Image 1 (spheres, one colour):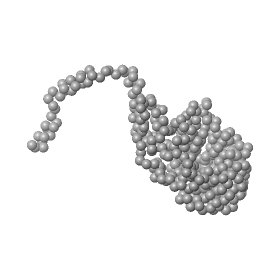
Image 2: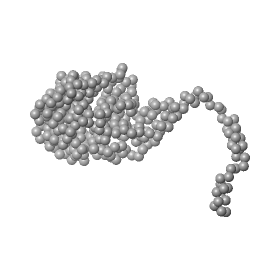
Image 3: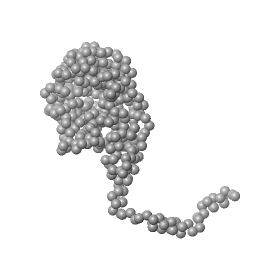
Image 4: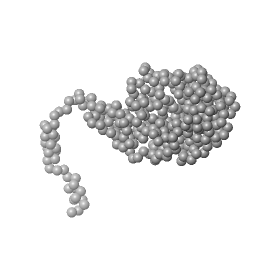
Length: 365
């Protein structure tokens, strides 16, 4: 048979095809009860949303908080349907995490592997993730991401938090019980007191090894030179009651102080501030500026639900979210929930990933 004849036979219509098709549809309609239009109109948007969520949400491995995020945005299904899992526990952006879990402090690699560093109360990255400052009781330890100890000092009181300076890592500031703020050189030498401070964790101005922001015992925001002790700038007004941490914007112009009922963003150079108030019965649990722009992520809790916003609502769950960390490229937020760590994409198409849990200590390059 020639190719031309074969093609014409394949494309020729079947005899009585249209009548056969009409007869088949008549049989189908008689066998299936007619749908009620009002129910279809009510269910159709839900079906579309389920399809969109199924495409855009991936979970690694499937976790309770992420599954709940899907279920709360559609009508509850008749059976528990989980989003498809993605391979392993690979981080969605470059860098490594610091977490504290039942085994102590661990470095989580980009491939999801965990390197155990030992039992510490907390830890913080040095610039570019070269070293880690970890503390337990009164001892501050500097070590490599592989766990090799470089130096140790003993503080005069129990250490509550520490932060490594972001430019070249020349200083480490740490806060002790008794509201004392101290500074030690990046090589472990020259440990000395700086000032009395409130309970909020201090924050280095981006790109600086000298300018450190902290809250005074009287609730005022101060920026001081850690070498001379000189007051560089002062916040306009008090920080919100219950402020636990400070967060700088990428350029070092703005700094946010988050309390339970409000967030106050200070412009120290211009001597002014603006207030972000909570909604009725809402409490803020965390706030953090993006390292790549002016976006401020805000986490709040109301009515038994935690909500994450960064210009828009990104994620919601019934679990409490006490801490969040931005990826170094500013495209993802890692959230700490009681069951797991949850990564939410901020820039680009919506996506949610989950990882084994732990207290979130930081995300470094």
